[in-house]
Every structure is written in C-alpha cells, then in structure tokens.
Amino acid sequence: MTTARKPSSRTRRPKVTAQDVLEYMGPEYGPVEWHSRYTPAEELVYTILSQHTSDLNSGRAFNNLMKTFGTIEGVADASAEDIEEAIRRGGLARQKAPRIKQVLAQIRDEIGGFDLSFLAEMPLEEAKAWLKRLNGIGPKTAAIILCFSLGMPAMPVDTHIYRVSQRLGLIGPKVNAEKAHDILEPMVAPEDVFPFHMYLIRHGRQVCKAQRPRCGECLMGWGCPTKPKMERAAVADARKKAKRKPAAKKRKAS
Ligand code: SF4
Image (cartoon, rainbow, N blue to C red; front, side, top):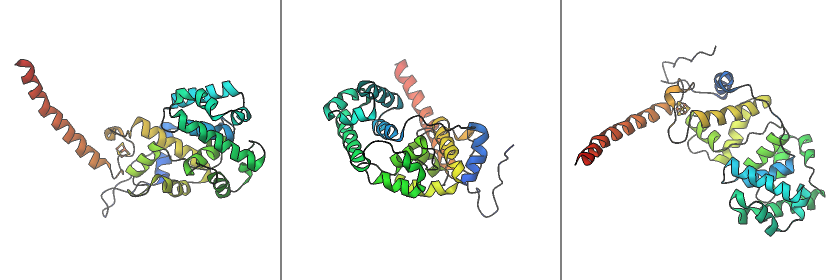
C-alpha cells in the first residue's frame, strides 16, 4: 500500500512528483490498456471534430462523416459544403469542414495517400515535427495522433491534465498548455506516458474538478500545494451560503 510522505522540516508540504502520480493513482485508476481506435488520419479528423465540443457530439459527427463518405479518401474527395453538412451535429461545422478538407489535401499532396503509419518508425520528435508542419496541427493534436493511434509515448495535454498538473505543482503557474507538453512528457519513462496521461484525466474528471475540487477525498492531498487554497475557498463559499440562507427564509416568511 502507498503511504503518504511526511512533510520535511524545511518545506511544509513535500513536492509531488510525476512518479508519485503513477504510484498513488495507479492502484486507484489503473490498470489502463492502450488500444488503437482509429488510423492516424482518422484520428486527425476526429481530433479536429472534437475541438470545442463534447465527446458525444464529436463522436456523432465523426460517425456520420464516415457513414456518409465511407473512407478518409471519400472525405478528402468531398466538397467542404458536403463535409459541413455531414458534421453539422458536432458544432462549428462551418469552421471545421474547410480545415478537414485542407489538411487532408495537404497530406495527400505530400505522401500520395493517407497512410501515416510510417510515423511510428520515426523518432518521436521527428514524428511530432512532421505532423506540426500540417496546417492547424499543434502539439496537442500531434500528440493525440501519435499516442492514441500509433501507441507512441507522446503526452497529449488536455484541459484536465493541464489543470491537475498545475494544481499539483508539476508545472508552474505561468506555463502555457503548449509548453506543458514538453515539460510533462519527459517526466516519466516512455512506457508510463500513456498511464500517466490517463490517470491525470481520470483524476481531473472525478476528483480535481475545475469548479469544486474534492480535496478532502484526494489521494494527492498530502503534497498538493493548491489544497490549502482550495479548502479556504470552500470554507469562504460555505460561509457565504450560510449567510444567504436566513435572508432567503426571511423573504419567504414575509
Ligand atoms: S488536493 Fe485538491 S487541488 Fe490538489 S490535486 Fe487533489 S483535488 Fe486537486
């Protein structure tokens, strides 16, 4: 069983490391299994569709897109208007359709098709650089394609991972999401990148939520530098609510 480390006499809280995340969250959220769900080109299209929308909506839009055109080649051959129609239920279809059309055209121009499996043979940094040259592909999309489709040790940093790793002090308060990829990825061994990614996402969804983190139940509370601040905010919030209640009761009575 994992036991909490004691604070040293010099610092009131021990610093949480990436290794601690693996050790503490592994028994809680693991084991995680990797399996490829889409080809790299499909993953790319799915990732564009998932921007600024829910998983449910992007999944629906992607399924409808593939049902309408059959293959990624079919999507690439379709007009931007027809793509827009097929992905309408995913939201922001007018912006996303031309982006999909454009990036697929760029890939076909460069490699004569859509088989991006050659990226798995490249060193990680070269594979990332290849993808990031494509229009509209940033570090997050590149990491998603390499990690989820090809099983490479790339670390996609989504909103949960960014928030949790900042709260835990793994990255500094001024580090932006793009830079966070480069800082977090080398913190763990290549074979641990995927579980590290999954644990932080699960922790962010279930415990370290954006609005009301459940610090009292958190298994990283022993070292989280943000916990005292969050607890003070929760107490202040509870006091405010308690003050509002009698006033509301009075209004009801009158
Ligand atoms: S102690 Fe609170 S702020 Fe820190 S990681 Fe846990 S839930 Fe998040």
